[in-house]
Amino acid sequence: MGKHIIPQRRGKGGLVYRSPSHRHVAKPVHLGEGKYSVKGIIHAPGRNAPLLVLRNDKISGYQIAFNGAHVGQEVSIGPGSGTADGSTITLGMIPDGSTVYNIESQPGDGGKFCRTAGTGALVVSHGETVTLKLASGKIRSFHPSCLATIGSVAGSGARDSPVLKAGNSVHFYRSKAKRPISVRGVAMNAINHPHGGGNHQHVGGPSTVGRGAPPGRKVGRLSPQRRKQ
Image (cartoon, rainbow, N blue to C red; front, side):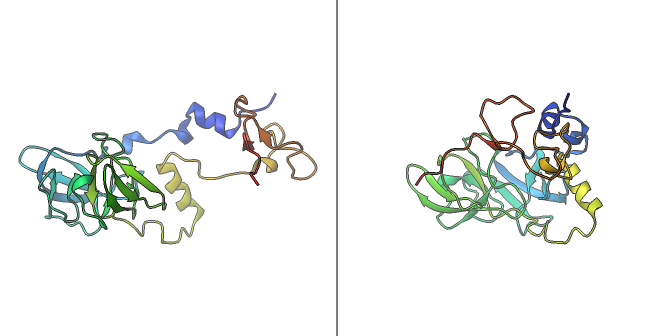
């Protein structure tokens, strides 16, 4: 009888794949309208981007840091915030050519796009919807009432420094609840993977599997389509 393959173990959610939520600082969300003072810049485990500690007379919270932020700076949220870096306003009020991050997919969801270190989207045009060019190069339309923060996410050089040691890579991936190593299926034994076994490394059969294949057999090329001429 074969052993559970890696996708099955990931789905079960063992210690290797379980997010270390006990070390997480907080989930950054859009705060209420008003002006806030930056009281600190902190590192959040599991994130490349730092977080801003925002506070005013009534409330305090966290926000993903923008490039150029510093302690003592004042940022605004809501209408009338202006177009300075760090201001959070609706996409309909942001001029063309601006760079934005932490963009809401639907109004009120707290932000879904461009949240990792160094990323930002370009505002291309306005109409019934607002057209943005995302960091991936994809063009996407958003509702004008979706909130976004002007600027780009801080920490753009988070992954530029060399890893140097395998242990550093292990700690990096564990903080994100990801498996630090990857082994090819053809390099495994037959008991560990459908592509394993044999006197030399080869799949040994069709590598295509159907979309409805059961767990444990669903490896390889999933439901491939014939190349169109």
